[in-house]
Image 1 (cartoon, rainbow over the protein chains, first blue to last red):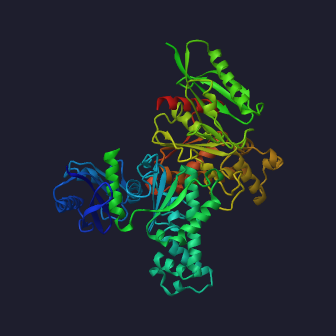
Image 2: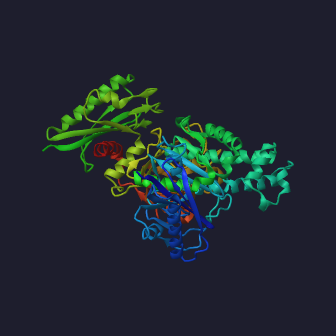
Image 3: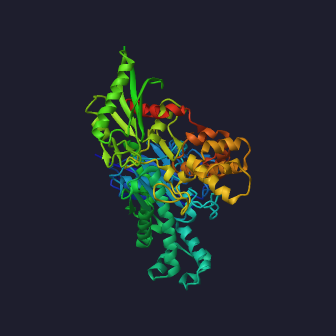
Length: 320
Length: 320
């Protein structure tokens, strides 16, 4: 009997990576193509499917492809489309699933990367037994995947789960979305850098971070400085955790998840982030929800998360 | 053939009201008992079912009871319990559905009043064709019922949908929940009164509202003053709408509803509330959601809403 696998594809601005994944989350073969080398979307889709076929060839016989899952910026699950993606070279609404279906008979499904991360957590990670949870992805921005009754929340448009663009501070920091004060301008790898920049103006503490040009500062440097007891870095984590905790408390009032998973970039800071987040959540949460929501690190390895999340979407589709 | 009906019961601090309701939302018979006259919960439940039986007797033959739905403060749908209700005379966790089931064989289900309002909108009102919407009830506090994929959002605890206790202004107005800056301290019938009180301190405008003792001020008086062009009243509506719009925009980022219904007390102010809310939503919303969410008045008559909502819960239960 042949072994069932799915293909997970992650479409990024520079590269599109893919893997053949079994139901336990083992990546059995990998491949990639350049995204930006194909200004014509038809050429891109042809090359993308070519790479899928190569991946299946690598595996050899004994495997059966069940479905293809794709994670892409502004991916719309309902329509199988990528809509006005800010970081890709194509404009407008791209009917990617339909275009891929010219090459294959298996189901092709698509969502954005944060929703894929939530599915990865549900199918392979720490949320296997959970029906209601949220994944916060703390990278350059803040993405979120919200699971309600075992299903990703897509809402009426397909674009639900934009917690990173909830306005936390009216008139606050400029956001890439054109508005101000969105959560991701505070609680993300980029957000903590901005907090350090502000603190360097406000405080007179010495800090190793003062030796780095502003545009070179990274969340990793801030974590390293925090480990050395750097006061600016520790204060920046405290402020970031405070804002993140407020968001978790407010998300709990909305959907009452049993857990919030923190994933990516900033979450690698470990106790520097998790300890103050837990403390502030406990301090701020409404009494009716006290003790009902756990703050957990993602159990999906970061370097494979994008492929695993996309493949989880494929498993979810055929098992629903 | 006998006609199917449900009984909807609304449990308030003072009275418990009930009605026999057909599938079209016609209330065919009504009844009530005093809530506060029964310090022993066993006596209360006996009297409550007695009143249900009387209601059915009023109807006479030709009707068949399908289910009983109950709306109650801190009602937990999952467990059929009322948990630590702030405004009722009983303490602890009351297993009301189980207790009622000693008297009847039909399903008995329970939720809080805002969730019942959302179900009323879905079964009888403006949300009949909708799968994703939110009802904001703007009374003394701000309650919310969130519908996702045609189901009320209860979350992992049964208490999801507490949008009124999302913290909008950290360190802001004292809230009855023991915290500060919750939405309901700004956007509710009580919230707009507090806004007027603040404005009277900040502004020097004449206002008819200055003639009323603070503790006698009502949202209705503020609406009447706004109709006369009172600047304090108009400014209070503007500020209330601004805060409410921010919440609607943030709720949209979370769950992407196709509509938000405004119900109760403050929503009766009509254009004084709806016009600025729509304007601010349009101004603040993330571009991806522009034009995707409608702000609508509830289509459930306010005086019967509690009974209708509870009966809608009963219909929903037997039709699921």
